[in-house]
Image 1: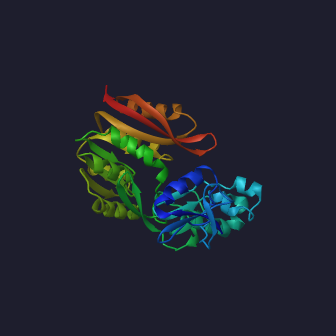
Image 2: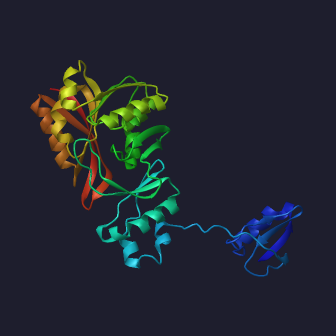
Image 3: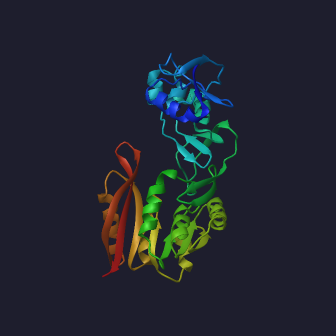
Length: 334
């Protein structure tokens, strides 16, 4: 391999100069001896001593997931492949179009190589049932679906086969946390493994009541409470929040309703439990905010209350023309 030979004390300066001029051969590693260093170059370079040396090749790192599949899939197939996938801890979950499912093993292997994570799974179904889980097919790596996901300094342990968790809501969870004040009493009606409660309680001195119907989710929430150093307190309940809440003898300053497919069916419970002037963080799937605003207003009016809409935002796209939307409303007694 053709190399530039320089004294060790000049090695870094020479490397920078050659890289800036586009003369360094990036496919090979620089070699350092006792007195001299050897930098691979593409051609003769003026002003330097040129020698031939055996150098170690650099591992070829793909610049994109699609690049790994070039030559294996057609250009059209690569274009149609969803290269955006969820990374949860050291697990990757892919969504593969129907027309590429027969090539899922190749795609899974590419995802494992590109991400260097522990395991790759493919979505086999939509989220379903009251426990909000989906079917997954193992594709590559180690078939271990338990992981610890890190978010805003919090550690969240979960089994991707037994519970629902979306890393794409990290920004939304941080936004809600930043709006919380110390001393709030908070109800998370559909808490899952506890990402909202954990992120909030790590940063705020609050009292959180967390409810979910999925026994596995509550078990992992209890583990996550122990895994994290919390400023606030979290009390977990397993069951349907409509039934569980009948034993509550307090009102809440904030209620989080992140069950976008069904949250509207629990608005009567939320308005019954919200403190005067309290905030409801409400979520639903919709193509606009109007539907959610009307639902909040109707539910408030049904129990003799009123709601002031203070914020609306699109959290993420779920399908063409449809969004996971968030609407924040303050509830007041009339």
